[in-house]
Image (cartoon, rainbow, N blue to C red; front, top):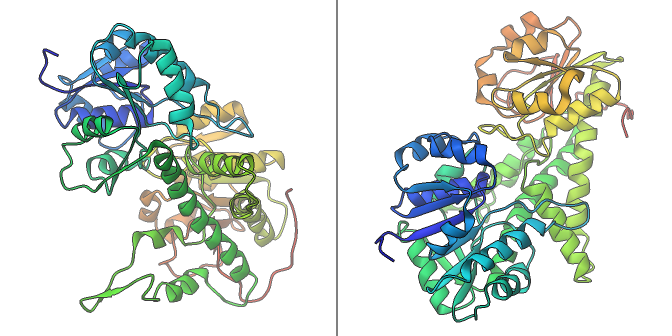
Length: 461
C-alpha cells in the first residue's frame, strides 16, 4: 500500500466501534469509520461525536486527519489490512441475534474479492463462543472466494466501560487477541503497537470469546451476591451491609497487605448494596451465556440465579420505598435515568424500570437526569414530567428514588433536599450514595436494617 500508516476499517460506529476507531487513530493509524447512517457519518466528518462519551469529542477533533468516516464499506475494506466488526448483537429473548454480524461478514467478504493483500477480519462485537470461527469465517471465505491463507480471523474483545471508554481504551489493563494463525497475530499486534506497556494475551478466537463473557458475568455475579446479602441485612436489627462487607474486605486474600499498607482491589466496588446492574452489556451478556450454557447441555444454576436476583432487586427496592412511606404514594421522582453516570445510555436502566413500575401503579412520574433526559423523553413521551434540576423533581414527589451515582447529587445538602420535599416525603438511596451523611428519618438506604423489623408487604409483582 502507498500509505505508510496502517489502514484499519471499523464496521459500525456505536460505542465500541467509534471509541475503538478514534482511539486507534490517536495512535497514528488511518481508520475508516463505516456506517450506513449518513447523518452519523456527517457528524463524525464534522468532528462531532454522535454519542456522549467523556473525552471522545475532543479526541475526534484532534485526530480528524486520521479518521475517515464513510458509507462506502467496500472501498474502505479494500484499502485496509484489518477490518473490525463492531455491530450490535441484541438479545432476542432466548439467544443473541447474529443477523448484523452475518450481514457485516457477507459485505466484508464481497469487498475482499477484489483485494490482493492479506486481511485480518476481527470481531469486536460480543459474541458467543464459536461465532468467529463457525459463523464469520465461513461467510467471509465463501463471499470472498478466498482461502484461509489469504484472509485471517481474530476475536478481539473490548473491555470498555461506558462513561470511561476512552480512558479504558487508552490505558488498557490487558489486550486479548484470539487469532487463527501466527500471521494474523503478527498483524493484530501491529494494530496495538501504540500500547507497549500493556499485557497482550494471544489465544484462539473461541477462548477470547469466552474470556469476554466470563469477565462480565463475574462482575454481574458480585453485584447480585451483594444485593442478596443486603436483603438479608435489611431484615436484621440495625445491620448495615456496607459495614458487613467492610469486615469481609479485611481478609488478606481479598485485600492483601503490601509493604505495611492494605491494598483494596477495585473489584470490591461491585460488592455493595444497590439497585442491580443495567446497561447494554451485563444483562445481555449474562443472558446470552446462560442461554449458551443451556444449548451446551450444561446443568448450571448460577447464571440463572444471579439474573433472577437482579430482576427481583428492582421490585424489592420499589416495594421497600412503598413500605417505608407508610401509605399509598401518588407521585414518584427518579433521580437518574442513565444506567450509570457519565453516559446518556438508558438501555436496561434500573431507573427506567423503577419509573415503569410507578406508572404501572398509576403514579405520577417526575424524572431527572444530567445527560440522559432526551433519551428518557423519547422512551416515556407524555407519560412523565421531566426536569433539568434535581430539586424541582424532588419538590413534586411523595417518594424519591436516587438511582444513578451522579456526583452532582452530593453537592445538594440535606437541608436543601428537605427544604423542597413534601412534609411526609421519603427518599430511597438506592446506591448508598449518601452513606457518609448522618442518618435522617426521611431517607433510607438500601442494604441497611431498620431499628426494628419491618412487616413484609408486597405491592408489585
